Length: 135
Image (tube, rainbow, N blue to C red):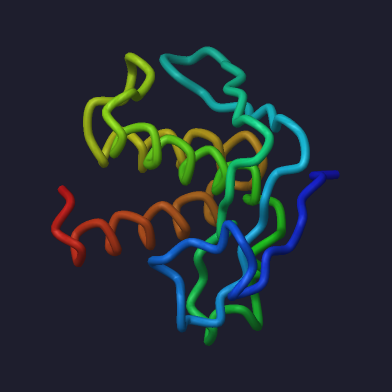
C-alpha cells in the first residue's frame, strides 16, 4: 500500500500546470521503491518522499474502467519523477530524452500489470508526448 497524502487545488504544493483542472494530486509520505525492467534485469528506483504526482493520467471518460490510483500507480510515480529530473537536467544515466522516460514507464507497468494494460497506457503516454511535441 502506498502512503500518500491527497493535495487539493489551492493547497501548498499543488502543481501550477494543473491549476483549474480539478485533478487530484498526491504527495508521497515516504520514499517509494518502484520495480522496472531494463535489459532483461529488474531494477528498483526510489522516488523520494515529498514528491508530488498526479498518478495515472487518465481521461475522465476512461475512468469507468481504469482508476488513476490502481495497479499502475507505482509506474506512474516513476514516470512523473523521471520526467521531473529529466526536465531539471539531472536524470539517471539511462534517461536521455522524453521517450526514455516513457519506455521506463512501460517497463515499470509490466512489473505491476499485464501486457495489454501496459501497452494501452504506454500508447496513451506516447500519444500525449507526440501531441505535446516532446519527441
